[in-house]
Image 1 (cartoon, each protein chain N blue to C red):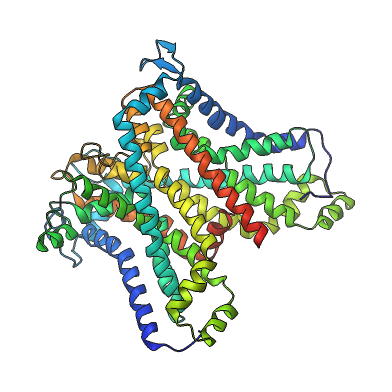
Image 2 (image 1 turned 180 degrees about the horizontal axis):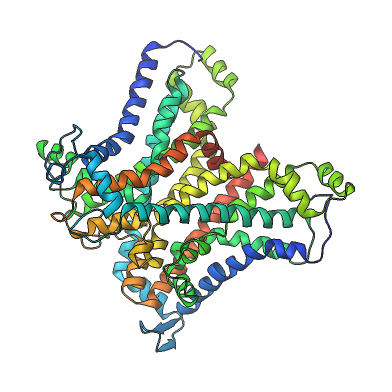
Length: 283
Length: 294
């Protein structure tokens, strides 16, 4: 605090409260709508008081799927697909990036620079710019409608590789020398020395990558054509495809709340690591 | 920087990089080469017929008014999202940097949108702004504004801009806050002692000091608006009304995947690749600068 300015302090809080309201209001409305009956949630204007149907609505979407108008799998199934996808993507990205960063920092081998540049160039090829040919490859491998198709093509990660490379470079050389003198091989050194040292980096990256995996949309839209392999995002899209009158907004909103709870909790509960991961992965 | 301590093995390093490199070749390089190759071919949708046509696809693309319109739409959209989002987040970050009490609570609220997926963001705002039952539309009607994004192109653009900004608040806010907190307090104290008030201090010290963060966020936000907002458009306007909100990524998807025009979609992908490469180069130039001056 540089100086005392009570009026400015009050203004600060006011602005921040308005900011918080901008962020929270849409979420609050979604939650309220999810507790009402279909008729109430389709009323204009919507009541901002919670309805009575909360338990019933959530139970319905979780066990039977959202509505009679549009056929959709139960939300519990879609949440499961999203969870598996997000976990495989996050863990996969972290493991293969750690291994390749380890190779590049602790070994000198032919082609090292080439590999480094190959990984670097992937930064410039987001899935959005190579949609059709990548879809072709996945379909040629017969990976449509499978967890492998939903995850493996997204697992390569230049950012995570660079982050681990950067971190390994700061690990003192003496540790590797000591390990070598004690007769530990490279894999033993990776497992017993580098892995424990990297733990905070791993957790921070995990939070970012989990959210990345959970929130994928364009990719599953192409790969998951069968309802049983829909992640939650695609499920929401099909729920609202029926047009204004056919949509049961209370069920849609219950599905949306369930869709944002897992990544939301990860961000809020692991806030410290989340901020670290966000800042680190952009360096 | 190089390590002095190394391990020696003729095969292990290759085994360690193999998974990453294999996935990179199969799902990045091979499709990218395919896109380049298809962009100079004329194909029917079923792959039965193809002919080498040099740069005809590109010529057709840049002679196509709908493509140029999509370019313009994307430019307007990304400038609005980047500038709007950054101004809003900077204001919040500046005040959050000031307050002591309750700062953690505000921060917890403001990071939530990062976790919400773009499709959910799209549907949330569509619900609030739906012409027939949206809560905000109701208020707008009461104010005498005729709101219907389904027929009014500018209103459709407003809808996707609001949704895209809302989603990006957390990211911009956290980076601005980190930038503000890294400014040495002694600088600001010195200015305060010399009699500079908060507003003057902001424009003469704080804003210039965070200009690297601002520039970095500008690039990141443009990339975000170009590539990560597909789901928002897909969930809300479908590029409509007409083609008023058809951004480039949405057009690649609808031409190539839904329309089956592979040559044009491939040429569009190549144009997008060039854009990403340019933006990445700009971003890394900036990172180098930061390292030099730090």
